[in-house]
Picture (tube, rainbow, N blue to C red):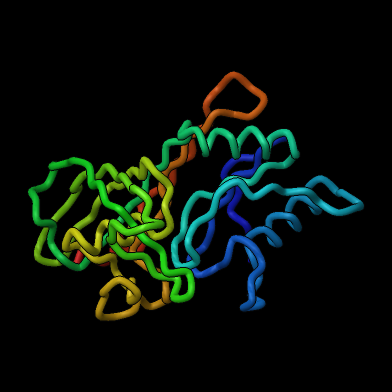
Length: 224
């Protein structure tokens, strides 16, 4: 595949993850984004040996959008710290076939307690032992008979947080069969896209902000 590189310097590589591609190698044996990115670095910089790329965050397999890799161990440590200290701002585009329960332009925050069943790889709203608080800011950008489009800002980084938040608030994401969608999307992706990412550069006194336009499927669905 051809890698869409969004930002590149000696310490950071930012790329666009296609839907349904794993970030790292897994049991499926499918080519991972990490492998493709390492090959890109190897070819661009003509590196003779092994290429280092540090994984500092992840997206669920059916989710697409902006992904950051660290090109040095120092950058990996500093970026990982930035993620843990909530110094990274992430904005996702979410699309549902349901109309929003609130009007266009409305916004707010969802707070939930989430518990993950690791055997089933499924998350539920359940304030039990082992549950973790999840907070998400949202804004209704569009809503109509054909569905709605949301902007989502996760304050915490819980597993499946945005997917569960949308589903339990009446706006299950397109194609998200795990959380209540009736039909799959054509490419088995779901209606969630990491559209914007802002993070402190690991070695420079500046903030890196990467933005991508809404994916074609979002435009197609809502224009019908």
